[in-house]
Image 1: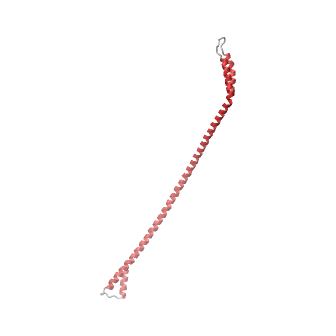
Image 2: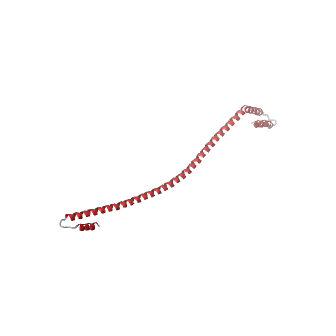
Image 3: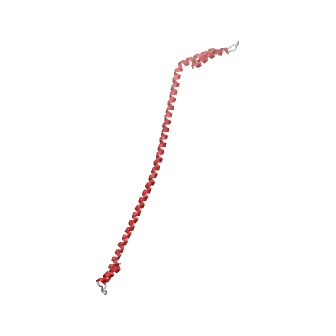
Amino acid sequence: MKKLLILGLALAPLGLLASSEGAETNYDIVQRTVNFIIFAGILWYLLADKIKAFFADRTASIQAELDKVQDTLKASQDKVDTAVKNLEEAKVLAAEIVESAKTDIDSVKQRVTEAVEVEIANLDKGFDDKIKVETSKAKREIVSAVLDELLSSDNVSLTQDELVNIVVKKVA
């Protein structure tokens, strides 16, 4: 502002010199210019500190807003970085879970296969045992029927040795 005041004072004589020679001027331009420069100087003297303080406060508030926005931006960037890191960890964990599930499926398949094979073997053994039991039961029934038939008939007279031979032949 001081530069403007000095410039105004320096240009004031030029305004006087620029007037035409011999022409009558009814204008009071010189007085008005001097009055304006004095008025501007008084305003500058009275308001300079307040204007400087206003602009300094405005600059500080703009800087504070800018700092707040930069802090928010940094916090957002940190959150994005954390989210990306968590995403990568989740992908690794998901891959591990899939591999673990595949391993578990294979082990369950193997255990079920072994259990089915054991059950089939047990069923085969039970079937063979049942065949033996039924075979021996049928032999006993046949022997019992033959003996009852031989013993009940009066017209057949057999000796003990003949009876034993007949039973052995039927059983075999």
